[in-house]
Image (cartoon, rainbow, N blue to C red):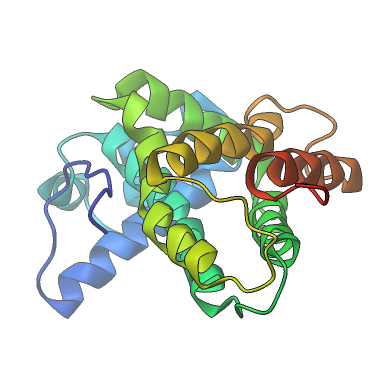
Length: 211
């Protein structure tokens, strides 16, 4: 992806090395479920993954890079799935149908995320990422696909927007989806959360009936 934010870890080229990195990621994910900073040490990750501390630092400059990569990888996964939904959206289906699918995808995905792990990884991300403001840039890869869906639409339900308008509105809509999870708000992931998110998405991306 053109706008994917990169965080440094030494990319493995061989299958065995790729497996090692994935094993390290999995061990870190499992340890992060506790949300206890004291349990997140290089020694703990090494013990759970079955690799030495030296092996861990062969692929990652510091321990926090592991958790940053986990977080960004999960974000990119959802964005890729959103792009797939947009690409497959039939031109004779109303815009609301696509928006509802995107909202369900994102909220259902967050609902499956361990709250302690999310809180812990977010804390590490915003503390250590060199350019945390670029988090929002990940969603920019959706813009061209959404613009194409808008142009192909024959239902006259997509609001006609420039790519710049889509970018800013997408950032605003994304906040409605993710902030309740980031803030441990009781509304997060509930039917009401979906309902309110849909209202916001419709206001930003759907034509009014009388327009």
